[in-house]
Image (cartoon, rainbow, N blue to C red; front, side):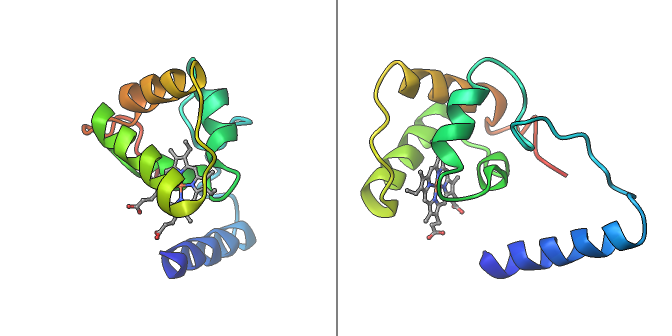
Length: 105
Ligand code: HEC
């Protein structure tokens, strides 16, 4: 995965040299879809990795619950307490569900 991210970064660099071909509009929350819950999600998840890793996933609500558990148990994330946990899960399930409505380009 790191290698994939590196080559993405290299591509982005090349594009900047040759003109802003893919200058996607990004909000202060990066590629995350702006809707209620985006702020909580963004700040909880970018402590360790890009929000792109989140945006590239498409999971059901229970899939996202498993992912958060995995972040806590294996990746060293602090447990997220309610109400933030529910806000974040609602946000992820609504905007990064299995049909991937906001898959980043
Ligand atoms: C304490 C650090 C930390 C935090 C905070 C964190 N993650 Fe992660 N996350 C990781 C690490 C490390 C990996 C890479 C694990 C691997 O690929 O082995 C990862 C990978 C992922 C992946 C990719 C899984 C895959 O199959 O490739 C997703 C999705 C993800 N995190 C979601 C989240 C979400 C959503 C949040 C916020 C609620 C979050 N993470 C917060 C450490 C963290």
